Image (spheres, rainbow, N blue to C red):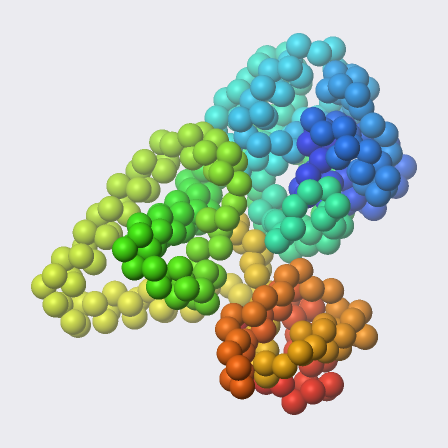
Length: 367
């Protein structure tokens, strides 16, 4: 396919989609708009986009495909703006937001004018953000949900799939309502729980200062998503409030059940509760990307001496293995610490484990 593609919002997702489309459709011309002019210049310099659009109207008028890659609240405003612009007759518009029902309802203003809008949600991300972190492989094997309105023809859905073919994602077509329920259960609720756990630890730390020091390791890992953008999650939760109110009421009932088991010391039932959770958790797919970006962590037992980190990263550099994050869980004098190295893919983690084993005697463990 060829034509003009206009991307509104040049962050990690928007930039990565631009790279995927350019790879699969090299004849296409990709323009971009972002509220940050510096971000626009960087996207052009990096070759993520071909042209800079000075306004949304300027970029949208001649576009064959428009991708709205902004927070969900801004997406509503942009849809309203696009409905007032004289667009090409067969233009196709999509978004990448984490909620779909509100956005799909808002898109009625476009549908009433004969403009095709198909909601989209690529379930992929990275430990890094911004257009400079854009990767053509970001969406590989990730689920990419499309939520077309019932008035949208299958022909237009297939056209969008062709545009997005270079993502190498696993596309699923579902209703906006089903999307919001699924995303609420496996993405939105976990973010609420993670934030709540951090708040609880913070309250306890007011009278027990050791909490902050001890809340490393596992606690830090299971609450890492609490570090996500506050403004983004504020808008997502408001957009998906109907689903989340129901899920949170279910969660309260679940916690009441556990509370009763503990209060009454129902040992066998507590065992069964955790046993069932373990069985379900162990049965989850390990080699697929889900709604929350995975950390591909490798744990390395290292002695505490100067230069050990540069030594290990030097091994990886020799084999051209890229890392996304690195940290030390615990180091004390004359006691081995744990070096945690994060990778973009499972393949990189496996290569790194073999690399470290070939250059050293350090023990490694996949977390």
